[in-house]
Length: 196
Image (cartoon, rainbow, N blue to C red; front, side, top):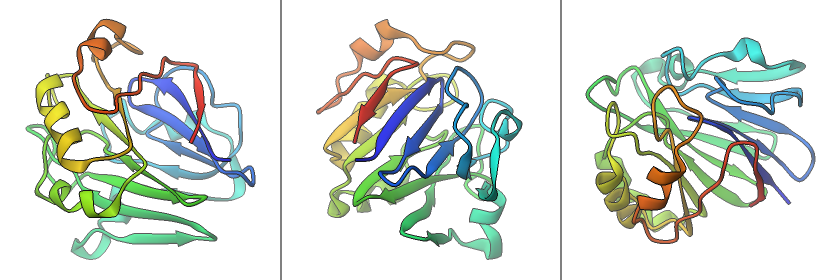
């Protein structure tokens, strides 16, 4: 069964049932000890792209926002049974032509890795996909605040909604996470791993 390990801030990793390892927006926290098969970077801000933290396997695939947006449209990558689909991301600091989120399908589980974003038009199409997990930035400074993130969670309708990127400069903020009123909320602390 696939697992998700939360490093803190906007950084986490997914380990597939076959042992392949996917890192999303590496930056901070612990848990960079497993060599990577796939590394996903949503945008080039320094708190989302510290790829140098990770030991990469010889055939590791690093997909950045630039590659995900190559040719002027959001791309989908099929990686030996793991699918990575770039989706819209934007906020007051992020031009949608320079950043993405991802929907990652691994072991039949769909995970929405939002990156840094506020509400997007494309989110309205996600409900039809019956996503299993969605991770939302909730800091309210650069991204959506708790209220907007809760509305996005309602719109998307994932089976479990996880608050991340809660307080710039900090790994996590438990108080903010507990205040989030999203349906099907799942709070994960840095250093914690869950089965998907």
